[in-house]
Length: 217
Image 1 (cartoon, rainbow, N blue to C red):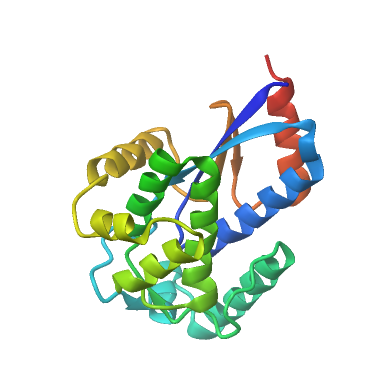
Image 2: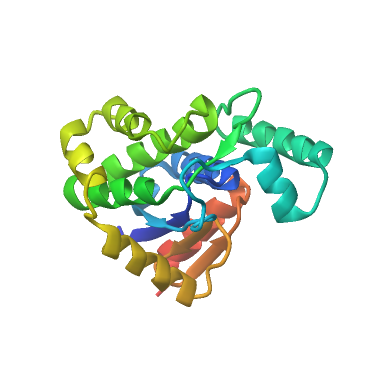
């Protein structure tokens, strides 16, 4: 059986990335053991310049998209509905604040390197849940460390990573690689370095793309 490599380029501050991941997971469940998959999570920052303290989410999205607060709230409600359909229960009132996520990407890189793709997948899901379901302050390292705890990983080692510059350059290099490759919005799901599925597509589209990748070459 051929293995399909999937690079899931995303940010944990991206609600559509949660929707896309949920749809991808449902696609993999549908395919069952017909397809073997190697899933990796790659870093992308929606707000790399976001300072410590973050920004009110409504204010941020009004500035970013040039729409009014009412429209932002309606859009957020639609995203919450889509997320629920694919297994992500977002906070009923939505997240209140936008934070810098670079340290989350460092933790994900560490886990992928030292514990493998399955552990990285668990932490990715937990960090998305921390951001969108718990809606807690990600400037507080203890909230990231609690996520590490919840998925059964090494809290003390994670604390060492956060307290240092470890994996900073590796994450920056990966971010640059995907930006240079033309990825400017997420989620971007790349199969076998050849097939790009852009955005939070329906489950059926992920199924079709994975089958296509498994039969290519």
